[in-house]
Image 1 (cartoon, each protein chain N blue to C red):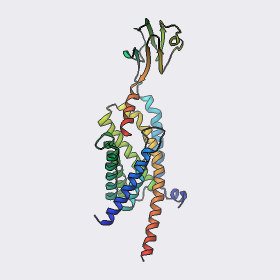
Image 2 (cartoon, rainbow over the protein chains, first blue to last red; image 1 turned 90 degrees about the horizontal axis):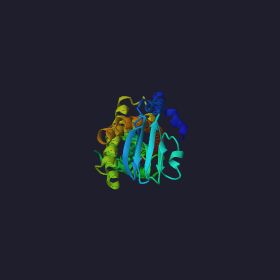
Image 3 (tube, chains in turn blue, cyan; image 1 turned 30 degrees about the vertical axis):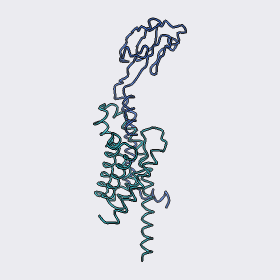
Image 4 (tube, chains in turn purple, brown; image 1 turned 45 degrees about the vertical axis):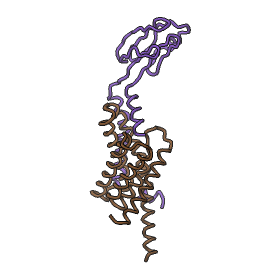
Length: 130
Length: 175
């Protein structure tokens, strides 16, 4: 009983079905992302509490008050950066524009994250299908 | 139901449960990816002994495994039940309508596809009312399901051929 005998017993319908499934799912993986509007949001937290949740595709500049002073955050062209910060080393400003991920300013306790709501609901799927 | 059928159902359910337990211990690259090894047993039961045995084995496997892991009547149980029953029914219907069109591998693919479709629909209706999330994850799940479905189909095919050979041997001995 070898793999050959298994392959011989496959029908044309099998091959068409497999090819169709692979084709449809692969093109699905590529195209669904393009079709869906990007639901990404920029969340700005100070001291662990969310202060702003802003859409990523709207250009805007906001300033938040942290323990050290005022941090200014700019959203432009789907990107985010910190333009002003009262901290010493200015790491958050030097990080520049980000398209995803996070900027963290520890001295002023400001965390800017670009989050995706889809990610959260995916986690729910993970937990229940387990 | 004959006594022989009961023995078969008990044996097949035990195998299905063991595989189901084994695959939950088996590490996979993505947490929700399951290999669907229990489908090997469902498919074997379906091809060798018919849809009634296959459905019974599936129900026993789903209910007992959820009792063992403590998820009975929970969300994972509902998804598991919906997926299992739908895929068994789909394979059974295809096999009874066109017995020669698909081989075991084709049937396994159909089973995997309907298992995933049923789970996605159930997850959408009951747990995540976000169509974007489902649409985003569907092609990935169906792709992975096709890969594991093919592998399971090959294993089932080998198993069924070997079991048929064994049956013939036993019959010859009895003569």
